[in-house]
Length: 292
Image 1 (cartoon, rainbow, N blue to C red):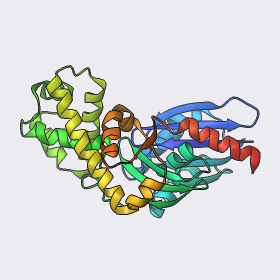
Image 2 (image 1 turned 90 degrees about the vertical axis):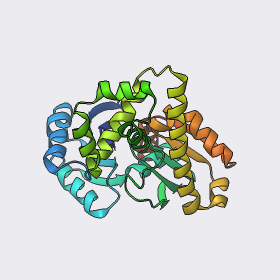
Image 3 (image 1 turned 30 degrees about the vertical axis):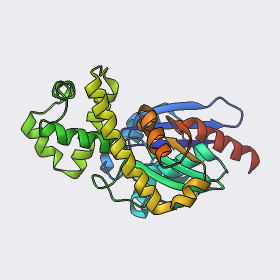
Image 4 (image 1 turned 90 degrees about the horizontal axis):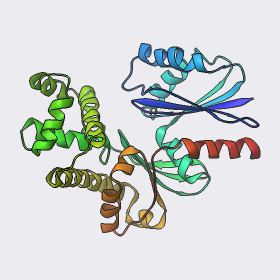
């Protein structure tokens, strides 16, 4: 028998089929955040992208670690949609922060921080999330994330306050005219998607103007400091200093020097920063397959 493990984000999902005696199979599909996607969009990912690449018959358990799955109603909706394809599989829906924590800490204790399209933080112990930092939804939350940094840049873009190189890049990449883009930016869901795309466009481009590089790094530092303040308010300075802190996510990797500098200024050490939880989740679940 095999288990299927999924790291589900807003824009992409990584699925790993883990068997005791066979090589792991990794499958990439679109994102499945239930707070951002309607049923038909999630079903399309499951039935059009995933199922043609995998047999469900030998899968005994499915662990879906997903963004947008923190609350019971969203988790149950995701469980129901997955159960339509995996009818004889034991399906477990857990949050992306639980997956990130298991990936970087395993059974150990520590504080994990996600910084990708969105952001969150939690305290792990024995493979379980025992405390999760509370924060408001974007745009008042998600500090230290790609979408929040992107939103700070876009606010300057709309008021013509960003460096010319950044403005030219955003002008080149936008699909809507300026007024339509500004109007969509007022919608909370669309705004997050637009801001995340803006940050991806900037991160994937070759910005060479020192003014532009400094500008983006300064806004990133502002966002990261807001994230750190949330963590200090929630966990307390003593807890942050007495637990190892590990980060995971594309934004944390891209802005690693910024994160290190901001945390260091508060006398906090970041032990490690990783791009993806997939390898760690394989390690965690393979260990549990053999020992439990």
